[in-house]
Structure formats: C-alpha cells, structure tokens
Image (cartoon, rainbow, N blue to C red; front, side, top):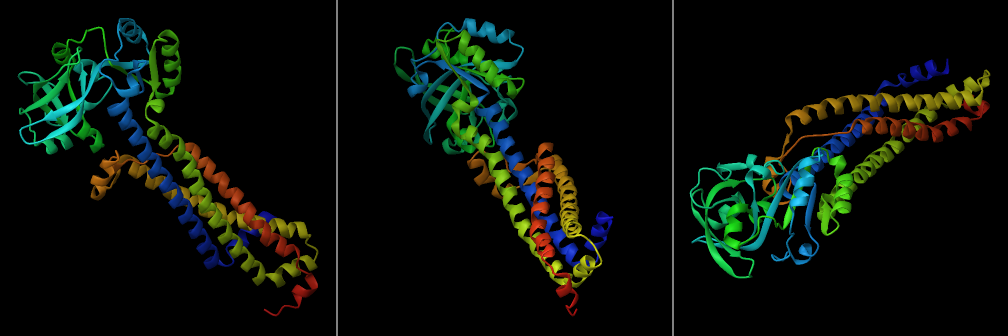
Length: 406
C-alpha cells in the first residue's frame, strides 16, 4: 500500500518530478558516455601499442636494456625459437636486430631506430603491413628495401623507391654508410613512433653487420589472449633464466599506468556525478516535505505511524532516482552502441591526438559490469538522499502541521 501511495505522490507535482528525473538522466547519461569514451580510447591506445609498438612480451639479453648496446645481444636463441613455435598460447614471435643510428637523404638527416625483421614472421606480431599508405611491405623493390614512417618521410623528404642512407654498425664496432631503397611508407596512430622507427630485413642487416643467424637483440612475442601474459612470462623466465623477459606492462610504464589508473579515474568521476545528484535529490525532497507539511501532519493525526511516513518518503525518493537513472542508462546504452559501431570522429584534433598515440576516431566500449555498478550506486544514492527529508518528516508535530495555512 505504501509503495503505491509513494508512486502516486511522485506524479502529484509532475513538473518538479520531471525536472529532477531529467537531472538524474543527464547525469547518468553524461557519466556513462564519458566512461565508454575513455574506456574505448584507452583500449584502442593499448591495443594499437601492443600490436604496433611493444607486443605482449619481449626477450632481451640481460644487459641490453641498460643502454641498448649493439654488442649486448642474445646468443644461441634456437632453444627459445623451438619453445615458442610449440606453445599454443603464442600467436606469433619475431626475432629482431636493433641499431640506433642516423638516417640521411640528400635533403635531411634524423636519428632513427633501425629494426631488422623477418617480414613473414613479423606480420604475426605486428600489423605494420596493414599500415602501409604508399608503396609496399618489403615487396617489388630492387636492392635492400626499407619501410619508414610517414612523419619521417616528410622530415627527410623521402619517397617510395628513393634511397636512404643508414649508418650501420658491425659486430667489430665499425660504422659505415649503407644505402637502402624505400619500399613503403607506413602511418600509425602514433606520429612519434612513425618518426623514430624504420624497418629493414633481418637478412640484409646480417649480411652488412656480420651478425650470426642464431643471435638477436630482441624477440617480440604476441599472444592469442592478453590474459595469458603473466603465465607465459613466468614460464619463459623459469626456462630461460639467462635472458631478461619483460611483459608489456614492465617494458612500457606509461601504458601500464594508463591501463591501471583509468578504471579508478572513471569510478571517481561517476562518484562525483552521484554526489551532485545526491544534493539535488535531497534538496527537491526537502522542498516537497515543506509543501506537504499539513498533509503529512494529517496522515499522522489519523493514525499513520511515523515509520510508514518515513518509508513513504524513502520510496518516493528511490522512485525518482530509479526512473531517471533507468532512462539515462537506456539512452546512454543506445548512444554508446551507435558510437561503438560507427566511432566518434575527432579528426579536427587528429594532429594533437596522433602526437600522443591516439586514434582520432574513437570506438566506444563499456564493460557490462559497469551498468550493474551504476544501477547499484544510483539506488544507494537515492536511499541516502531520502534519509534527511524522511527525518524532517518524522519531526513534524501533527497538531502544529494541521494549523498551517496553505
């Protein structure tokens, strides 16, 4: 009975009830919209970085990471190669030779990171072959091919089939210039990566540097499931203790921090919205109590127990919160579904976003667990917001309330 009365009371002053419901709707919609936007942007950045820049796991020699010294390489990697080729958790792996050096054209020069790869294996680890915007991925090129980023190509004024001279170091420490021909130009969502990284074939670098086929500076590993990273890392560390095994979170602290901190930031943001809604709901219900003092006093005068009055006010507040929240969740869900499929185009800020590694088209993403959390938090907010107005109603003196002149 109290529940039915409370529901009818909500609609006695439609304007006031609709205003507070719309406020709750907008708050929940805004919170979920931002949640999905930020989660989608974060996941896109992480997925892009893992597939293009860092991979899930990397293996190096024990001292290589101290200063990226060319002579600190792994020897006798055949055992690792054999192990990874039989591990079903591994989607692909790539052995690499890495040289930090200088790239020059007749126009300009720039510092670069030269990565020697096996193109056939590399496509199972990175998606660089899908990022080619001009030319090809190590194909249809005479001589020694090189793939460079669009940002670097503009800086060096290099074009497909044009020559680039790299300063290469051999195993004896001697450096010398070597001419490569641009096979393709790639473009990722990270212009800093594009400007710094060039890719050549492993076999070309081995011939130039005298690097043994069984040696490598780095082995990059991409797994079928990101959830297996810790398990695979632990297995590799126990089987190959002579090498340094790092997961993506250990090798890239910024990505790890971004991934771990984002959920916390989003929850804090939702709590701030609910905190604001708390005061809005409480204020509205206090106004309603003041307007209905005579009515509430009459109910208590004819025998309604104070606890039932308390419950009635609480139910009214919860109804206001739930209706507004559910409408907000439904509208937000439809909006998020649309942007999850079509993406939100932020191309007008593409230059700034790509400078920090973000795609200008953001595809929204929201874990379903967040929906349940938001509903629970809204209910709790409604209950807490109803306590003060309900206590105010309990303090009414029926005799005094009946004397109020409406």
